[in-house]
Image (tube, rainbow, N blue to C red; front, top):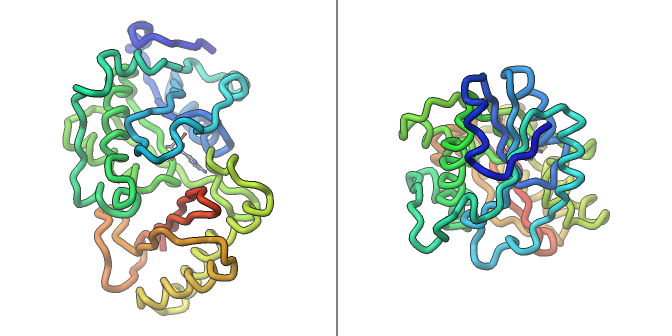
Length: 276
Ligand code: AMP
């Protein structure tokens, strides 16, 4: 495995079929599942580890975002990843952030769900992913369904900006309890983790209700809020049932619809989703 810090180091691999897995590090089995799939579909796998400042809001957790670079590199080495790109901030943003050209995703998809509460988040995500795509020049971009809205927005950016990269999306990897793996789970104490598994239980209860024949949005949302209310310390930030590709709200739940949720447990923000 070769660890690269400079964007100029990439030119030697451009003739190979490359699958690219962008991450912010603090890797877990969810990231590793993306890497394993990337290995199956390309000759060369590139993983990036970069905590992107432009996707964090002023009051968010950029400064304390969990880091474990040594452990991450060992995990990737064990999977025989070809290249890990670990750029410093000034490699990605050499001219600073003040005068930066930004990629602005369409508000119809970027101002919904997470975007409603994290106003510039997806602009930061699109900007850094476009830069990384231009540096790594992958044939395939591998993303996790855990961040569903991100997959919708990045697919649209790739389509709109004529980027010649295929997007592969893989299912969310979960703990046995159902809790979606996330780097931010490191913030959770065990008692909070036990509470957090109610999120997926609630989504599953909603799906069961839908499969029993109830497509009333209000009833399905109620099923979720009722399940989550079993634990008074979980506060729902948003709960939406929408079209999985356009993210537009639906009048009635339908097969293939997306249920997306964000909650806070003691100020720790967790997201999850499920397709009906
Ligand atoms: P992050 O490091 O959180 O920016 O995530 C990097 C990539 O890993 C993104 O494409 C995420 O959607 C994906 N990812 C994060 N958590 C999971 C998970 N539990 N299962 C599958 N993919 C995930």
